[in-house]
Image 1 (cartoon, one colour):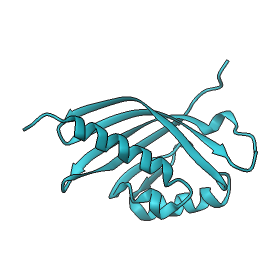
Image 2 (cartoon, helix red, strand yellow; image 1 turned 135 degrees about the vertical axis):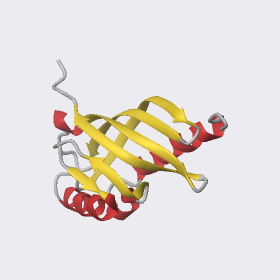
Image 3 (spheres, one colour; image 1 turned 180 degrees about the vertical axis):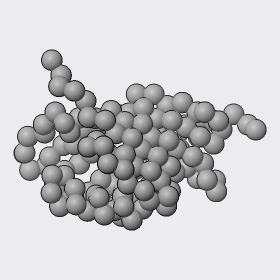
Image 4 (cartoon, helix red, strand yellow; image 1 turned 90 degrees about the horizontal axis):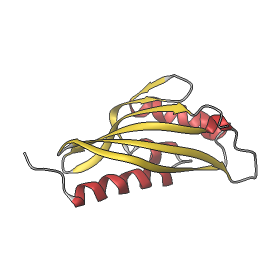
Length: 134
């Protein structure tokens, strides 16, 4: 078993950025996850697999997340093995039509990435809204 390389870290960071960039398109966004991924969103619900991730984001993108983009940053990236990485991230929904971004749209979340068939993909996501900032 070999150690993860700089290329692996770059690939996982690129996967993350491309996922952020796909925000607003349910199918494109879900494509960054495995077909059987677990997706826990901020309100505490769980989506299993592409269909549920797509359906849930279709609702979000037609309601509270319409006309928005997702900004985020990786706080920490750890490789648990050469083929599994955990990302600790912070994110924020930004509205492009000048609506106010309320505090519950600021989140901390974890993503688990796995190398499958030579490429990196997310297998799990867990999102928690940040408490009110003082």
